[in-house]
Amino acid sequence: MSKERARRRAEREALAEQARAKRERAEARRRRWRSILARFTRPSRRTAKLIPGRSMGERVFIAAIAVGLALVIWSQVEELNTRIGLTVLLVLMLPVLAVLSFDRRGG
Image 1 (spheres, rainbow, N blue to C red):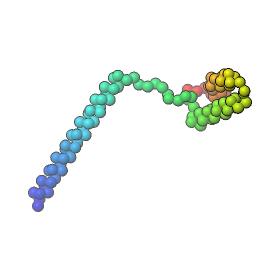
Image 2 (cartoon, helix red, strand yellow):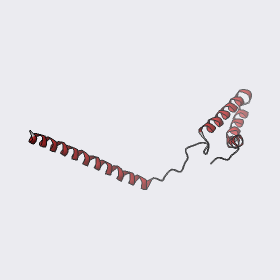
Image 3 (cartoon, helix red, strand yellow):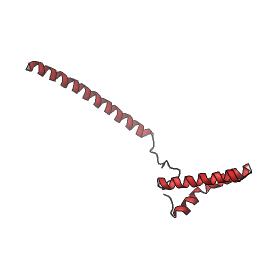
Image 4 (tube, helix red, strand yellow):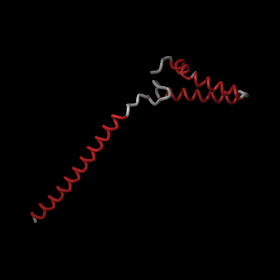
């Protein structure tokens, strides 16, 4: 009986060793691939935010104000050229609106 248990334990240990070796090879392959990619890619320096330096609530507030003003422009102004011009002006004035509404500079 003990010989049978020893044989089964040896089989389990051999399988576990094979699985461990396979995991280590895969991990080494991933590390090599990441190091190769790191050599050819530059780190991203973008903040990925349209309005950086603001909390989520502030960004939502600024966006809501901008959308509200755009709706007012498009509902109250008749001429298409004037609508487009005022909308572009609104988009360009968003940073000024942010500084005036929160009394601090972003970033």
